[in-house]
Amino acid sequence: MSPERKDQLQEFALGELGKIKAGETSSFPSFKSLADQFGYAPRYVKVVLRDIGITNGVVEAEKAEVIFRPSLELAWILGLLSGAGSVGGADLDPQFRGRISLKRPDDPTLLKEFQRIGENLFRKKSLVEKNGAIVFFSTKIAQKMDKLRGDAWAETISQKHGWILDGSRYAWKFIEGLFDAKGTFQTKSKDNAVKHKALYVTTNNFTSANFIKDLLLSVGLRNPYIFSTIYPDEEVIYRVNVGNIADLKIIAENIRLKNQDQQNKLEFIKNQIQKVLPTKKELIYARSPLPPEARSSAIKRAKNFKSQIGKDERQIWIYAVEHGLIEKIIKAGMLTLQKMESIEIYWQTGIVPEDLTKDDIDQFTMAVANLA
View 1 (cartoon, one colour):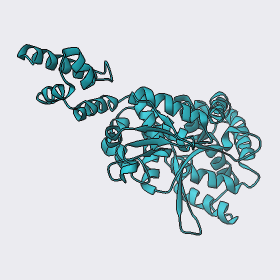
View 2 (tube, one colour; view 1 turned 180 degrees about the vertical axis):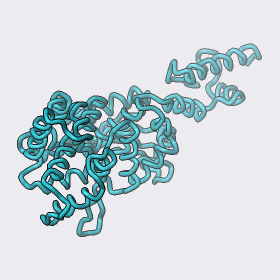
View 3 (cartoon, helix red, strand yellow; view 1 turned 60 degrees about the horizontal axis):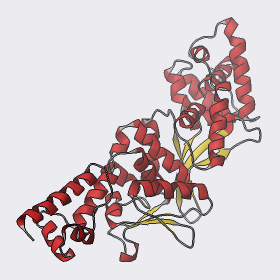
């Protein structure tokens, strides 16, 4: 090969690699196509390119770098795989390394979206296995993703993909993927009332549950909370619950679930939420002594709230505790700590302490109704 031709080949190859780095293309010419273009044997082309640091490994690594630049697509994929997928890292048996897959036979729409977004993001064709799983194979991409299974994914997102936590756009897309994977609606009553709905995610790891809770708080939710259930075999399941209607409204306005049934429930909340959310005026009433002209409106709202909670009025106290309203009521000056302690005794035992009046109980109910 003449020095001039060698320089032309190397310059051309560096230009093609530059296009990959810039995100202009995802493909690099094969050694054979370069050999045909410049009139030399593929093995010689390989040697010439290696002299300037271009190998198959370098090209694949550059492709992976482009893929893992922050994007909404990548945030959603990482959320989805953290919740329900599988990523084969270098620590696994060779047969599983480089395997990125999702198996959801009960949700074909989600599988199609994973396939579509994955092919666009990874610049690779997917495979459909006999069991319906969608699979991508790439050791470099799997290595860049790192551990997204079991109890390791929360640490991986924090340490390897921290950009997701830096901006709300990416955080919301990650949450959307996570809820697509593991989100569940719970309906607590037959009347389909908004106040009786909750959206939750389950995990068997407290660190993961706490990560989800903190992430939801970071994007503006007021009161996501964690339930834990211990089963007879001593397995502990944690549930990150969103039951506050204001929080459900925020979620409904910021994500769109791929499962149409789940999305329809979110749309219902989004369309109906204003009918039950307290107004700013009502929040002011709840924080101060009620003027006579406002008391009837507040009492009406409290009665409506009580009817939605159920006939057992102790559920009002349980609701307030579960939704973190006790401290808010005290901080807002609605009731004193001493009064709250007396109300707790009343709700839990049925015994009425000497310092507790019916007005105190009514004030507590109205405060919960207006802050719920």
